[in-house]
Length: 295
Image (cartoon, rainbow, N blue to C red; front, top):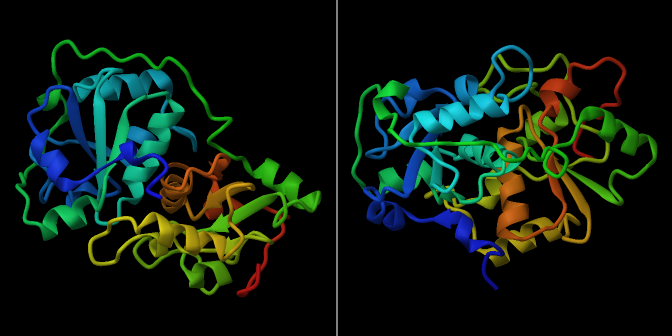
């Protein structure tokens, strides 16, 4: 058996063959473009950054639909455009953007399997330099967010707390903590590469199972593992398609990566992201927290 939705993945050769296709737009999604996009990027690729184009400019939330539509038009993207996302060397934020694209109802959005890692290893063509949005605005691009679907994609803290109080976590609801083992146990409160984005306390949500996001990819190429390998990985922890599943990490970028694997590569029908993740849970007063290796 192959991936449940192979159409959401493209390889490097496919991208090379569609670099000049007017119906396809390549978009790099970065946490820090100074270490990625501005150093080199795929020819013709536009840029979305987590802080400037996905996050709301004022509150802890996402850009409004009209802002999202404006960012799309600036990049020459219309509702019927095929959008291929790739990200800095682990594709975290590309998967995060994929999640937001689906929330806002974009039909044809895909991930470049392996992202920058695979592209660089194959010595594919690159460009460098700084591009401002108006440099790649294309006349005629029109975008309208026709629907917003947070309900089937997003989980809030109050819902998880309610399910914990009912004793459902670990039974009908499976929480998958995709952070590193040291974050899960509470030894550290943020990964070393993001020291300023930590919570006041460490640990994990009681009942959550630790399956680091990185186990789903080939460390050499950044590509997703085979369907059989992925099924074995998650099923050994009881993460099966008949259960309701919620993924979380620190701010949801790694959680979105695992969400993509479970929902689109394995075809699990009920997978959502707790995007508040540990940055929210580890800063809230009075919520239950567990330390150590056990769920």
